Every structure is written in structure tokens, then in C-alpha cells.
Amino acid sequence: MIIASFYKAIAQLPDPRFRRVLILGIALTLALLVGAYAILLWLVQSITAGPIELPFVGPVTWLGDLLSWGSAIFMIFLSMILMIPVASAVTSLFLEDIAQAVEDKYYPNLPPVPRVSIADGLRDTVNFLGVLIGLNILILLAYPFLLIFAIPAHFAMNGYLLGREYFQIAAMRRLGREGARALRRKHRLTILVAGCLMVAPLTVPLLNLIIPILGAATFTHLFHALNRR
Image (tube, rainbow, N blue to C red):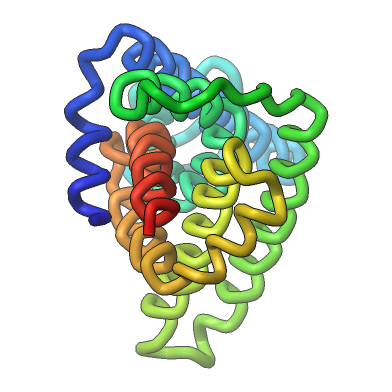
């Protein structure tokens, strides 16, 4: 079911509306990564009061090097750390359009749904990002104590959180907040597995740029499959 949903998401990439959202999602993801890198660079150089040295990059002197090839390489590695919270933000902003494109193609007989307001979407995004970032910081601090269990714990926790959010947002469009929560609890194991499968490619540079959008489409299909059970 999960794999079939993912293949359907990939198959829809040529759809003009889907491709448009995909391009916007990639652009926003890159903008967020550049912004995060710029803030990090500014903070470090403010503390050191001079250029800093990055491995394999050399001295970095703020804006002049922000768009350099060396910075691009560093951002690729930075994306491996930041892509999980970035994926959450991108999905919350674009899932409505992705879900509608998916439903128009694969579920054309469904009645229309009201769009989620920008305020509600931002509130849910900020709340979830706070939980996601906070728990990732805690697990990072616990790495020395978890030893060989650190990576499995990272995948399990982020898989649970991402699966929970992606499915909740997709299901709320049709079932409302409480209905989505009830369905999510009923199929929590399937959703956990789907979330964990999503975490792995989010750590792969460049590939992780398209995973948030494909993940949103996949969870839309997954919701409709589980809702029919």
C-alpha cells in the first residue's frame, strides 16, 4: 500500500499543476536552506570577528562567499541536518494544492473541501516545528548515551513525527481534526512505517529536495486507501 502510493505520486510528476507545486516547493526549500546558512554564517562570524575556515571550503567571508561553490557544497551537507524540519514546513504550506491535484486525478468523484486558512496552517506548522526541533535537540544530546541505538532512535522518532503530521494534514481535509486523529490512531503502525521510509531519503543531498512534495502526495493516497478500510 505504501509503495503503491509512492509510485502514484511519482507517476503524477508530469502533471502541470503537480510540477508547478514541485518547483515552488524546491524553490522554497532552497530559500530556507540558504536563509539558515546565512544566519549561521553571520552568527559565527559575529562571534569570531573575522573570516572562518570551513573544511574543504577554506576561509568564508560572509556575503561574498555566500553564493560561492564552497558554500554550495557546505549547504548540501547542511541540508542533511535541516531537511526534516524543512520538510515539515514545506508540506504544511503546499499540501492543500498537492492533495487537490492528487484527488482531481485519482479521486475525481469526491466533493469539494474548504481550504484551510493561512492562520490555521501557520499555527499548526509552528507548533509542530517546535516539537520536532525540540525532540531532535534532545535526541542529539542523548547520542553519547544511546550508542548503537542512536540512529534507530533518530529514524523512529522522526518517522513517527513526520508520518503523524503528513497524515494528519491530509486526513483533516476530509475528516476534520478529530476524525483525522481517530483514523491515524487506528492505523498508527502503517503511518509509522511510511514516516520512517520517508526519513531515509531526506538525508540524501539533492534527492531530499523533492521528497517533501512526493511525501505529501504519497500520504494523500495513503489516507484514501486507509479511509476505505
